[in-house]
Amino acid sequence: MAASSCEPRYTQQLNRGPAVPPAPTVKPLPDNASPQLKQMLEGAIAQAGVTTGYDPAYVALDYPGGDVPENTGVCSDVVVRAFRKAGIDLQKEVHEDMKAARSAYPTKWGANAPDKNIDHRRVLNLMTYFKRQGKSLPISDAAADYQPGDIVSWELTNGIDHIGIVTNMSANSGDRLMIVHNIGAGTRIEDVIFAWTIKGHYRFF
Image 1 (cartoon, rainbow, N blue to C red):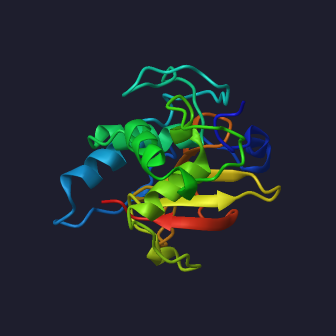
Image 2 (spheres, rainbow, N blue to C red):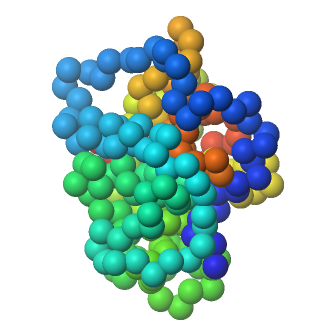
């Protein structure tokens, strides 16, 4: 049973550099940025180079606060771990929301009831949760519309779902910010925001 829809073979299609690009251009956060945004973003970026593997296997987790070893995981784990640094446990939040509104969530995996071990690790469930929390933003082809801390989900070219977080780093002087994500080679910071079809755009903080 796969944990999420991230697809490790896509690592072969990216021009891989180091997990953290050398000397990126860093965009300062606004003075009025919330402490939670800063904590979440720092928690996301800190995973690059620490989570070096990818494993979508179903794992029985503690609840709340359960996690697989930090050196592995999938794309959704990047988001879950970052949110925990900001004091929000998506494992608990998604599970409780699914119990309250099961019919609002996808049923493509054939589950008969919410599963606290896996539901928060599935991209479509995170998308549904963020939308239900009123955090959706328009999908745009303008790089400036994607701000640090935004969550972006994609449909890869074979229909697989993927998710990542917009950082405050760019690889050049332009306004296109890099993404922290795990698509098979561990958590990395890469210039991939328009690499695939964007299916969701969310701003939680």
